[in-house]
Structures are given as C-alpha cells and as structure tokens.
Image 1 (cartoon, rainbow, N blue to C red):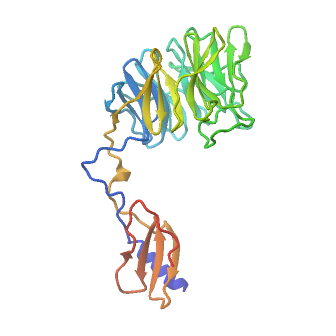
Image 2 (image 1 turned 135 degrees about the vertical axis):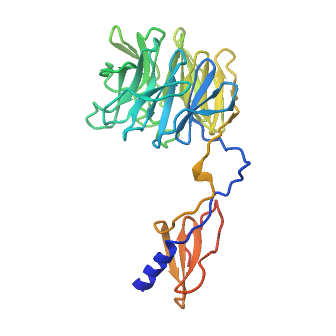
Length: 359
C-alpha cells in the first residue's frame, strides 16, 4: 500500500490544473484598497502589498513600490512631497521614506521590532512611529520621533501609546492607549477597548477625553476638532465622530450601517478612509463623503492562468475498491489518478469552489 501511495504522489508531481481564468480585457478588481492617506491633490493607498497613488478625483493609479515584502501605512508629508511608510525591504518591518512621485526608498528605523508608521510632525522634518522595541512583554507599543535626515529615535513620554495625531505646533498629541485595528474583534466592549487621551508635551500632563465602553481609535487633530473612529452608535458600526475641544461635545459625522469604516486618515481639508474595500473622501466643510473611482492597472501575476505543482498541496486521498485508481484532493479540486496506466483527470475543475474529502 505504501509503495502504491508513493507512486500516486510521484504521478501527482507532474499533475497541474489551471486556476483564475480571467479575461485579459477585464479591468482589475480594485476592491481591496487599504491604508489610504490624502494630500492636497493625491491619494496614496496600498493594493496587493504595494503602494499606489492616484488623483483625488480618481482615475488610473500609479504604483510606487514593487518590493517582494509587504508595504503599508503610507503617509504624505505636510507638503505632499514625501511618503513615509512601513515596509519590508531588508527582512524586517521598518519605516522608509520615498518621494511622492517615486524613487529609491530611504530606511529611517533600524531596530529588530516592527515599526509602524503613524504620522508626520507638522514641520515635515520628523516622523512619528510606534514600536515595541522598549516593551519587555512585546504586548504594547510606545511612540517615537525620528528625523527624516536619520539619527537615533527619541522616545515620547507616554509609557503606552499607539496611534496619535499632533495639534498644529506639535505641543500636544491626542493618542489611543490600545490598538485593535489589526485584530478581527468587532463590537468589543472589554478591558482592551481603546480610549483617547491628550498629552501636553510642554507641561507633561495628560487628559482623558473618552470614557465610554466602545472602541475609540485613530484620532485625527484638525483645528479645534478631534476626529476619530468609534463604534459607539446604536448600530455599533465604526463611523467617524468629532470631539469639539471648545464645547467638549461629541458628534457623529458619518452614519454608515453596512460596513465599518477602516483606517481613516486626515489630509489638509479632508479625511480619506476605507469602507467595503473602496476608498472614500469626507469633506470636512460639508461633512459629505463619496467613493473615489480608482482603476489599478496591476499585472496581478497570481491572477494569471498558470500551472500549479500539487505535490505539496494534497490534503485528502481515497483508494477505489479495486485499488486501480485513487482520488486526491488538492487546491479545492478532486483528481483521479491511475495505479499504472491511464490518464489523470480533474473531476471537478471548478475554479472558485473548493471540493474536499473525496471518497
């Protein structure tokens, strides 16, 4: 039996199937646009692990990065000339900076922990990032300042801090104490629910501004308003809220009930965010939002029809009563293989549907 099974494996080594049969004339499905940011005239986002830019009016996007590793969290500098982001060029997730028109990335951080890009200082001379390099348990991050000219990082006073945003002169910072943005939790109301604080960097004082049991995260400081993401409304959907620093009042800005808003980011006069895989722009004057129609002309090599080696992807098998043929399950397809002579056949051949446990 073992000899027969090994023969089946050897035959499968040369068996291949064709998947993802996309028409060459079909437009790319750009419904996984993530981590957007906006400048005065452009939007930057991540698609298929790479960084792209497009006009605020939409249209055809241009790719800025092609590294084999993942790039994410891109942020425009205040003047829009640079983009800082977290990327993996050298085997570790560090912060890099690149011209917004494209160019060679310059590495800014150099520690073995993951460094998450957070934002820019208002003068555009330094970036703000979070890292667990000083966290003994690797369960939380702290905020650090790094000059775009290089040098050693400067740790901010907060012992535990995640995503934050400065006021106009960087004398104060609004920040969240916990970060669940990369987790799959929804409608969470436990002890890890993030709260927002304002830290006065000149006087070394802190003030908590949210106290409810909802998730309050990704704060954005704009004038006398602090915008943030929260699921505190009756539908418990993540929408954008505003906190007025003068009146101390909260107000819901968006009222989506279908999908949660993800990764909002503040520009000069707008907030850009992801919802349902699309990118939306929110005008801070009219408080109206609209989707941005973006076409991503990526080559998408994984979507091309291609041959696949199934030898290492077999998850089920079954012998026929006579032992003359066997069934194998691999990559969601069911194939029948002869003991010696005959053809290998794909019995299901249904791309996009997974068949398992053949018998």
